[in-house]
Length: 221
Image 1 (spheres, rainbow, N blue to C red):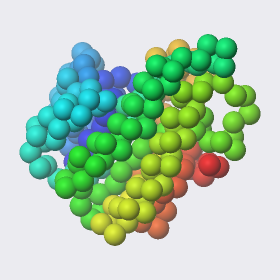
Image 2 (image 1 turned 180 degrees about the vertical axis):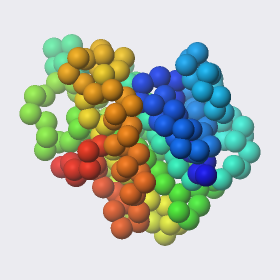
Image 3 (image 1 turned 45 degrees about the vertical axis):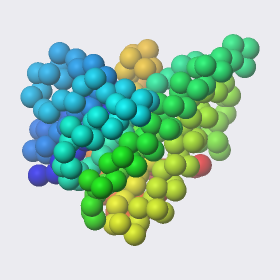
Image 4 (image 1 turned 90 degrees about the vertical axis):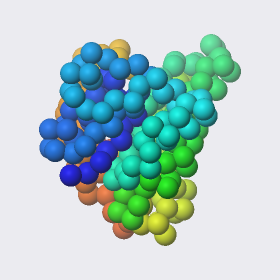
């Protein structure tokens, strides 16, 4: 039984991670700002009231965990705000950078003493963080923040390798969640997480630092 911590766990992909990890017998720690009724019904350990962009909140979370060893950390919390060239909003750019790129790195550093040889770190990114795959432009804040997250993940893969900790940068596919406006073209969060967990299960030091689609294909940087 693995101990798994998931951020952004109160809905969507984060909730699906909690549900599937619990169903297979893993111990789940669900981190979120506000717990949802659906999350509370799962019966997993919930650490609510955590704003990952606030340093004091991260420190408080670490204190709550009391040095608990973590086998899998899934950094899923994120935000998408549409920012076009015509409607460029510097405050929006900063918000997306803080939550999508800075917060995962900060939390990883804060939890470092609770990771061990064999631990796995999964950063939830997006294909929109691929520079080579950008064929439509726009979405400046989201795209830029996910590129930054990819670079953080690649550096973490190098820096954590001597500790025996592997890192994956993951794209879930187009998923029908609140973030995507529940698009009819997307797959369900449950289907996405089935593929994502296969990638995490297959993660090792040999393939650490890879940028994967949930379906197993390697994405371009």
